[in-house]
Image (cartoon, rainbow, N blue to C red; front, top):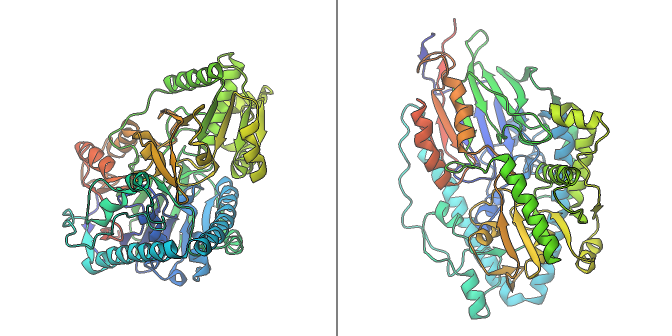
Length: 571
């Protein structure tokens, strides 16, 4: 074992994914290089989305490279902003991720332009409400900017001394509602739907206390479709298991994360000077689950000096896979008997393909009736095309099905919906039928138009972040506000967690346990610190003591916190 030298020359800054499940961005800085790992958008409640507008926290022109773990918007969706602001270097990711990211970014830019136009029309129709909404948005921005500024003022935190940050006090409180762009309530029903139940002054807490409000409008696009088109020329392909020199003194190895097609765990070997022993930093990205359809299991990792691991499902366990499939079949049969509609909000990449796979298997087994299936997500359709083009990423089961002539990525009675007019026409289709539609957390997307249908069942098949409309519906909300209009929730709400593409608590702990097997604390390859990211606070607090029980020091970073990482002496 080589001695450890503590050096201020290597820093890791948590620019996103800190005490929240979106906006993953981690900046690694050494004396020789600056690399950004993931470049995601904040999503969900208005208090969280406003963080996308806060200054970056670094100069993009000084970055040597960006590394992307996978193609979900909260891990790649901020790339157009960084490129627009001057980043000209390489963006490394797997080949499948590159194709999916291009789809995601172009779709995101187009939607933001559409939302901005809608907001302008709304302002013209409601000038008085627009003034109040703009004032609330400005207040949210001020709070987010102050939060970011405090992190910078507090300075670096050595990983050997990691006290919990002091509670934030004496923060201004947003008046009445913390929904940024929601028009003022016009009735008791509106007020009840919008009013938070408690008053908090900590911005992190306020972020998670959002009322059941979905507001589509944006004052201006974060970026346009044309700006998104400028990003793909900078993509560089990485292959699983093949080390790449991505910046001076930094070598990256991408391995399969088992989350979605092409997703990666990224292991970095970092040397401050040529000939030094490397400091190894492992970023889990979003960690998948063992034995899920289509793709391989997450790669078992065995050595690291530092581990940055997601914690989305800390404190929670999924149903067994077989039980989740049984529950899905039960819901389909219930909808068939009732002559109703089954609505499945699903992320366009990963979850949609898995749900279609399972429905196709259930049809083949004779377990469910063949109800028409509408894939009401143009992006999901394009993503499925990418899945078909990359069978090299499939697991053995899916590969064998393809060889036998099966089509597990295509439900036998599916209808691809590409245009808004086609989506609206579904309402008049003969029932029963099923719809798989974006967006997975109901932060937007077409599925929200079906909430007031008493013959509909909404089936959640993935994580609903705190403060999102999906989380409120799971908690029993019966009145919501959509684009300024109050609606009663009349549909049934069901949930199945077994289809989550995220590892649950037991699976996260099993993955982390592998790092310490056969080693003692202080030995090379035994993690000095495990950083818990990409999770809501309750989940992180639940799993932290269990990670510590494995023998690792843990730290839950706050937004914009910067830590010093020790480096190993050279030979």
